[in-house]
Amino acid sequence: MVTTWIALTCPQCGSPLPRVALWRSVKCAACGSLITRTEAVVTRDSFRQAFNRARQGSAGLDAVLCGGTRYHLMQTLGVGEISHVYLARRIDSLPLLVTLKLSSSSTAGELYAREAQVAQELQHLDSDGTGPYYSRLLPEVVAQGAVTGSHGQQALVLRHPTGYWGSLASLNERFTSGVDPRHAVWIWRRMLGVLNFIHHHGWCHGDIRPEHALLHPQDHGVRLIDWSAARKDARETDQVADLCRSARTVQVILCGANGSAALPAQVPTGLAQLVTNASQDQDFCRSQGAEGLDRLLQAEAKAAFGPPSFVPLVI
Amino acid sequence: MGYGNYSLAAHAALTASRAHKGGSEVFAQRQCHPLMNPKGLKVRECRDSADHPNSLGITFALDVTGSMGDIPHLLATKELPNFMQLLTACGVAHPQLMFMAIGDANSDQAPLQVGQFESTAELMDQWLTWSYLEGGGGGTGEESYDLAFYIAAQHTDMDNWVKRKQKGYLFMTGDENPYPAVSRYHIDGLVGEKLDEDIPLQEVIAAAAESYHIFFLIPDLARRKRCERRWRDLLGNHTICMESPADTCAVAAAIVGLTEKLIPDLEALAGILSNHGSDRQHIGSTVRALQDYAALLKLPPAKSASPAATPVGKWWKRLFE
Image (tube, rainbow over all chains, first blue to last red; front, side, top):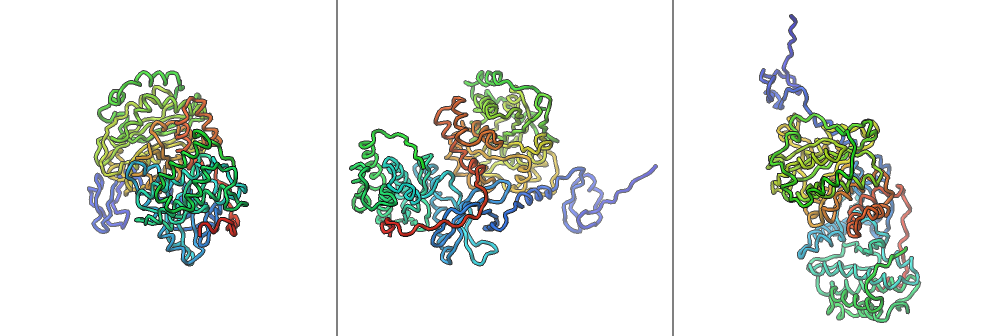
């Protein structure tokens, strides 16, 4: 008869284990490891390897490392005074599309930190059940901080809003003689909707302008961007300034790139009067607020174009 | 498993016959069904056969805690035949469905239930309705979604992956955050398997994602606020925020169609849904839910374009100074 003797030793340190290790888990007296003798132990290592494989995407020279995550720069979206803005993709088997701002100025870091803080606070606004709707139109921060391996470069990573064609400034370039006033109506209404929501919660945007509003032609959506000048507990004058500047933005797209500040003849008189009043008269904006302006706008649109209908915006 | 042919008529009749019934009548289990108990589970197989030479494994891991019981009920009384019909309309010829039910391993009696991959209406329906809707959940804001990822990674074997390197699909529904790791104590107690240590959630997801396209479906916009952030960190654009639980099947079928490139874009999807008899609201909410994911599939080729010129000297600049 042949007897096979298997020594019970700790796989971690080689110390002998007590005999009970044959039928239950024991702690190694020498190194403290928990030893379980079993035919099939599932090891974490195989899962860790899968995780490492998922993060090994080839990103080339365009990879940016921020907050422990690598991003692959896909496309340049724009260039500002302090930032280069990119469409980027998180390097992972489950990717995330992001808008990545990379600083080109030493002052950007502070502004990015502020914008990230503002975005986080805006995402928590909700009092009347409309928060879930509007939160989709407000910025969502993914990461913010220094770019690892760079020399002081800063990054702000935001969730990328999909389906947006470009800014209202770009729209103005496209329609050199001004957009159809029917489109200006819904564009202004979308801006007023968001402004009403944030003003109701005591905030202001602080820097409404054509470059800071993105357009979603298919869904007739508008998204305000660049919230670095936004303020909580805003003064009434700041909120009024938001409204005036939203009217001026509408004035710009109605006039077109080759125009002047005078609204073209194709704009119905009532609508032209409303845009002019709102863009120039702060007392008018103060008395109406975003909600009042929206009501007046709806009334003028109905008088000029009839009941609301969906008119495709072909760009 | 996975033998037999699917009959839409049989499936529709099956669900229609109980359309008026309440949740407790449709889901009559009052404890984990013995055949869905994962204790001692070795492997769930999705195999090719003569009838199904190109099988495609699709797993639904349904959150069955108190706040999420509506989706299993919708599937069992109305939506599952629609899902199969949409898959067929998209050109997915041989889907095999498996259902898992997920609860909270820290507080529920049956936090993990696992069915089998099936091709026939009767067997799909059987596993779905054998699920025990415990309606628990711990109130901690976290559920044991990690267990479903572990089972997918460790205990499923699909011919679509093994033979053709075609990933299967794992659709998880839920409205809470996941626990941060797979607990070896839970796996030991529920599956009867030893882990050498706890497995961080990111690692078990990465392992499951090697053979599955993974998606987390949040049922509506109100519930998205409490869990979307965490899931988006984990799954990126594979986190799908729906506007209604009723969109679950259309969204899932559309994801399969888009990912397999059987549907070219969201416009084509809208056409398919319209032909299928969906109303405008349903089509709109389905398309909106999928915009982020569809954008991922339609990425422009990577390039380092030269920076766009900053517009200067416009007449209107002075209006904003």
